[in-house]
Image 1: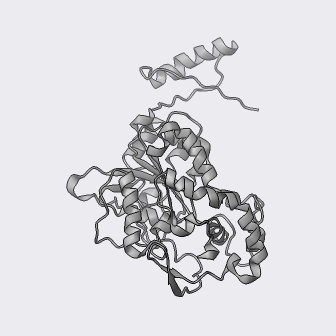
Image 2: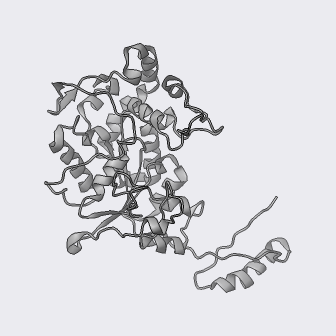
Image 3: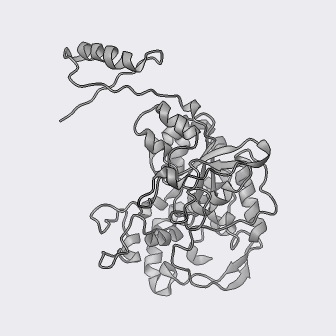
Length: 381
């Protein structure tokens, strides 16, 4: 089995000093052996050298595509890396894409200099689907439009699965003054969305294995994928406040100033009181980031919805406590009358999450929609 070792040297040392001088001496002192293989020196930077103001760290399947797209339309916000402009990869014209800066840092507790420089110049760290025959440079050939007026621009990175990885969130917390944005949603609604996901779930090719029925998928804490591995979405990931609590422990006493949690329904015009209510939700987020309010003429858009099966038509039948026009109760999935027993089991499983969510929203600056405060599920509104 191969083994490795590491040596931390002062930045005054050159790459050659470390590889040819310090490392062989250090190895002989440790083991009495001569260096049989070449050493590779890597220059490291400090967390404060990363030009990053906020991280949109979760939760996937809670509307992060639409919210980050609208946030990128704010005159004082830009996401790194810039979204691809090639329509074959960015079919619905989103202005934000997932970044992977902290994944690229790996298990190091300081970031490499070259990586920091690339990120600061918006040349790192994209990911996602690829188009055959095209490189990242090709897909990002057109730089993002500069923000007008020479205003201070808040630089952000979106990766809605960071929240599930404690080491990555520890790295985020080490970047001085960086803020974390989190969006939660109804756990049962999340299960429906996760089951429809096709990116890591199953192939749509003819003859490929299909996912298990929704009821079987939602009844397990771990779900095996048809490829023989474990599916990275399961119902435990909808225990949002457990992950939020872990992040707050990492940030310590600064959590309330550096972490903002809000609910997807607070920026959903169907449940937030129309476009005016949605604007209030986005302006609350802008205030947390230290930005001015969104332009009043901006119409907020929904993204990443055409890739999913269309929901059943909804018929307006009431007015919520916020003044929003409420739709008739959903009748699909677990909301169907025939799934009463499965829905009851899920209500029991997520009982504490529904109870905890309003408290955590209040603690971390998010508005609490009326139905969320009443612990109602997707199937109740």
